[in-house]
Length: 297
Image (cartoon, rainbow, N blue to C red; front, top):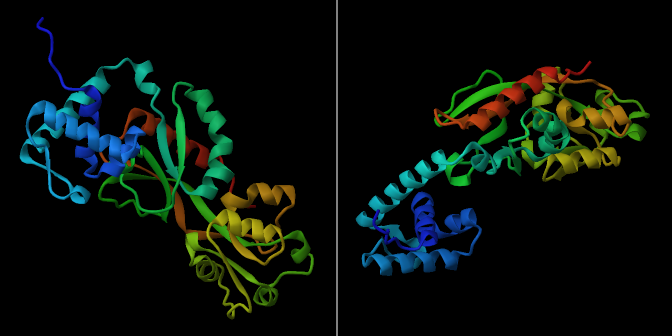
């Protein structure tokens, strides 16, 4: 076999990543190198090939026609290499799961040892996110979000409901000891989270309660901060049952009015028609764990 005369493989990888993402910064993040390193690799590749692969201003580079053909061919070639690798080599790449931060802390991570016991060959990487995402651009294999129960419509994802959502007012034992009814809720500072702003309105609608505006409103960026504020006695929050089970069991929080079903439920999303085998296993495990999670009594 004749000796192959190939450009730098690092340069080819850098160019292929730029071709997929369309942005130097995203390619650099994927390869764990600097923006400048990707730019230098692409310039070197163009010099080695003697052909322009990109065009336009530096801050808005785009592929030339020749660059687009090369990028597409490189993606196919690297996909073939990935498919040809032995299972053990492929499994070293972690399964990336995008998840709401508080759900990851309070429900998912405490259960992960059970998943690893079933599938020790699968490494799992949890990324905190509650916003929009792109499976390919963001390198996500599976996402966990809240969706209206029964709503499985998505343009680019297969949506699997795995756990219902219940919520209700939670507060510190000291505040709860004073007695909690609708009138007390109206007197107490009301805690909110930017993660889900309509929580109070939704609870009122589902519980058949109509509250007057709060005398004091306090807002926090995340559910976790809001629930810690409730435990510290800063007011009353609408806490999802899934997030507060442990704090209720330990006595850090009280839920004197109980919980009602919310409009949303927890769902697992995987790429439509393109989910990896590991993502499918994780989704099935989530469904099983959701069934085992007890509803509020």
